[in-house]
Amino acid sequence: MAKAACAMMLLRLPDRSWRWLAATAAVTWMSVHVYTGCIYVAVTILGLLVVEPIVRGGALSLRRALKPVLVCAAVIAALQLPYVVHQFQTRFSEPAMSVVTGGVADVASGKAAAEWRKSVDGFVNSMASFEWPSATTTGATAVLVLSALLFSIRRRRDPAFVVLIIAPQLLAIVGYALFLGALDSYYYLSLTPLVVVMVIDAASMPARLPGRHIVSAAMLAGAVSVAPARIAQARTMFQLPEYRAIAQGSRALLRLNRPLHAIELTFEVPPGVDSEYVYKAIGGVLARDAEWDAAINADGSVRYSRVPR
Image 1 (cartoon, rainbow, N blue to C red):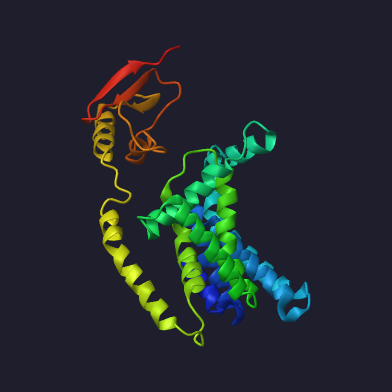
Image 2: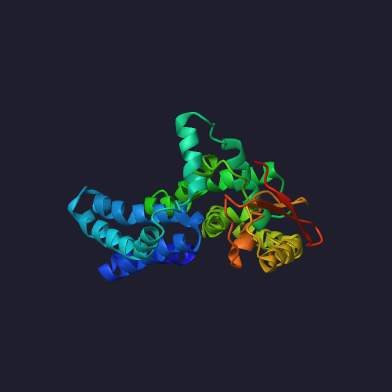
């Protein structure tokens, strides 16, 4: 969805009519519904939809921003109605994105520090794992920084294009620095198309430059050379062998139908894995006043223990 929204912006579809503007805003906001990590792309696109008309033609005009503001606000409000209804039905007992907002609150109050190094390393390593599996962190960082500079210089006459490609990457680094939980590489998936556009555009050579055919052939050879490593990595990317035991144990706990306080795992799993998610997804309910805890073992078996009081 985020990729489709970016394509609509690059094709200048919102400029054609208010209907295309509404469609672009809808696709953009629906991408956040699909995955909240798309918020960095969404904020950039919505910002461009509002700001670009203000500065169009080199003359500031707030009147030109009125229509996109109203259209975007109406679209987002309509798409959020089901969530508003859900919150009223649950009496606002389920805060939205509490992990994210909790981290922001802790940083703002001074209880925790923003984790900039983790955020930058997460972004660089994720882009490397998606596009250049054999690259080192230092090499990937150099490629990304150099590409960003070259792209910004080459496309300086089209600031909206530069903002569309660069801003989500910077916002993601800031946003995930305020996210105090464990980061996973898939958090950055919505940024991958933008990074690819940035790198390819930065590496492309003007038609009048001599030797461009040699450089193009070298780039093609490089792309072909990394294909086997990418294919091999794709076969194992995002796989979680431990899921079998978690799912088997969760089903066993659901069949036993004993009120549970919490579920823990007795084996190691990657950071960020929620030991209780599968149980709740298949219909299990945890009660914080229940007297039993459960543990799932590596073979899928389960055991119970009383909650210490």
